[in-house]
Image 1: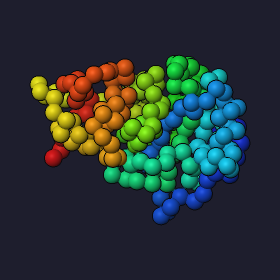
Image 2: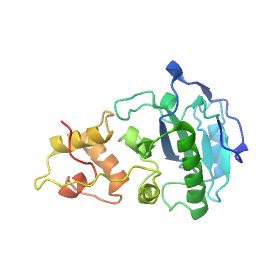
Image 3: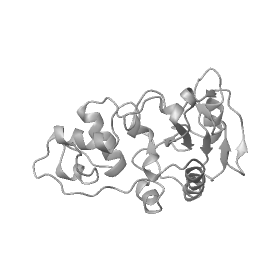
Length: 222
């Protein structure tokens, strides 16, 4: 169960998924390196001890390094929706981007095709498509503020924002509760959590917590 048409460049940095888990998440990253070739070399270097299932270049070339059935080493420490060992639960996609410039049209087109196919193969819902920053607030910031989450959401390839009424007086305890209900269960201080939610829903937003930060998280369930 792998992607037809992908260029294979096997990485040794992988292994069996633990506890017989199968993918329920897709984690999107940026490489933060200067070229696709440099990223590919690192993702396949045994000494680096990192990998991903797929790498998409700025020109839209799709390279597969690890079979989807295997556990790639892309997520590291973190948690989403109460589940740790994200590597065993996910498929990792690296996008060739430094985090400082927009993602190219060919790259996004290829990503969308790959997402559709993987979501169908593994029956992963839009809510299962997340960024590295979502599961590791404060530690990771990719795919960053230039990534177009709204474009994916419009096509059913990522969760649509759960629009809701916002509190008049922002309260961090309520914000943490709503963020947790939305999936942000990894340990993080207030500033890191706020930054992670903003990266996803309000890229470029700065300053203290405000009512707009609640707008896409939905109402708390408890």
